[in-house]
Image (cartoon, rainbow, N blue to C red; front, side):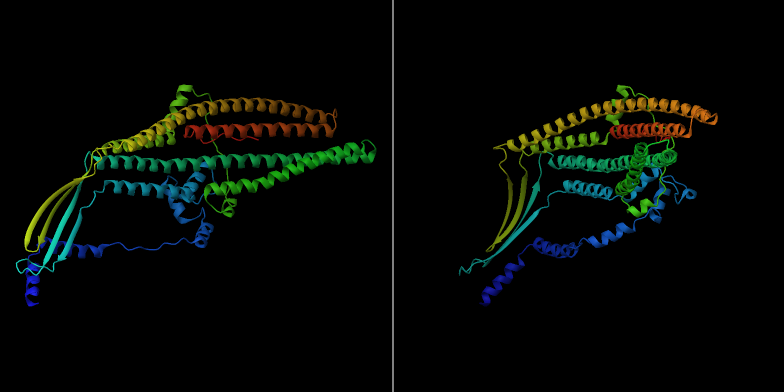
Length: 472
């Protein structure tokens, strides 16, 4: 027994210093391991945070200062499209999602650049062989050093970089969608306000007509049928006004959803229309296509995804060449010191990765077909949107001419009333006809603004100026 113990001690003294170093390094690096930290979701807390959001928040005020607003403009008393867009960019949670996805893509880019670490393996054996010449213990240590061939690491980095760029462009794409949604909601809200104003005036005029017929009925100059008819017309106007007032709250809720703010906060805002006139002249087809293809973020994203698909194909082609594993090792086997060098690799040369290459090739074809389809769609949508703008502008011009004719007619009838040539009922009906013409002009303005919003969204570029004047 004493002899065996001494033999074991002798064997331990022959263990190379490398094994001791590996044990020490492993012990030290274990201290730097990251620990898992739980981060549960808190739906109740998230709801409270959402309800506390406000456009008067100091951090949002600083955000406005950082984006060109002066201190004397704050806090904002009136909210136009630009101010509401900044509000959506600051408060809407969809941008946080896009940013988180981009950070994940950036991390994937770092992961792609990481080299495979070497592997260390060892073993310890003991023999019951009674031969006193042999040592009873055997030790072994080997290191597997992976060697990537065919530039695979650089290709992985290229693929991850394109996906990261696409994710970054998704942030800008999300920001544009927010801006477009806010613009559409504001356009609908402005039209609703015009409707309420005109319908209120119309209801008052209808009430005047009812009052006139009630007086005439009392004098025997009108029938109950005529009075019932004008009362029905007044009720229709009142119902339309009531619906418009109710729709105001729906539109404010829609705007609040696009801003990422509570409804009560948006309801307290003073919303204003756009002060300047956007470009409504015809845009040449070549300029239209160029503007759309150069500004569309989804086209740039599609280009990045196609480049990533190409990198994926290059990687699969590179995988035809097997990676190698260089394995130097040392072993002490029952008294013998043995050094070894090994080299291994997968036998990919047999099938040459044909299936994976074919799949990557088809994926690249899919990305190419999607890009071509998107490009054609953008060109067609731009032409359609531009045509709709021109038609809406023509319709608006026609309605404005009709309104001008009606206003001239109303002025003439006002003079006739003063001269005693017509009665007040005729003038009241002329005012109602004028209200109808104003409603048509407001509707035409609304359609033009919607068409301009659609054209801007198609080009993903604001047109000259901030918006079309909404004249009642």
